[in-house]
Image (cartoon, rainbow, N blue to C red; front, side, top):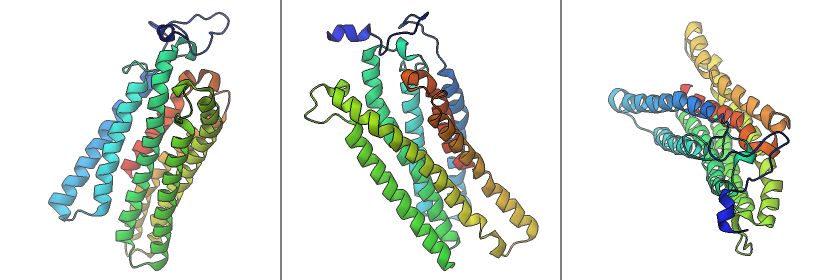
Length: 286
């Protein structure tokens, strides 16, 4: 295909009664913009408050605080990438129908989607590690809790490394694939591996969130606090259930072929991005 034709050829033919519109297509990318514009400022504010408290009030800055800063930076980078991949404001493909996406834009999205998945896994899992390191400092004297924390850290780091390596191998062009990002073997390989890998990662994230939440909750009865304070602290931690709920909704949408139609993924993927951003950013409220 002539490279110039890539700007005027849709990724898929429009269904009956529809025509491709490369200029002003119907878009739902505003849903993603709205969520990010609400949750990202909260993440930044909470991080600043945490740093201020550590430096000015407690005068202690631990490893979990550095991990928190790293997670915030990766969150900002991830949010910026998602906005770039969205039709508005970034001129990407997320939020419009696939028949309104020229092949040239899809090629750009393929590269951005790779970075999207890797950055998302890194960002969401580094938050879990930050919490586990924080719990290690709180519950260090309790032997079985230390074991639980180390087991959690090993599981999170191992799965993150596994995901990154497999996704890179599956969804990056190999030297022998001269068709680049549109090479049939790359599309077939990535199409067969990536969906199941990402779904497994979402399940892992939900289970991991439950595990991270269970550690402090199950230690509440042993803390030397009044009953009222124990209830209050438990309620703070239980707000993490909202992040878990968002993760479960993401799983439901992802596994429902009617809600997440792969043949029009650029349109139907929007709820996945929305629940992903809500679920991940809500961790910071705990």
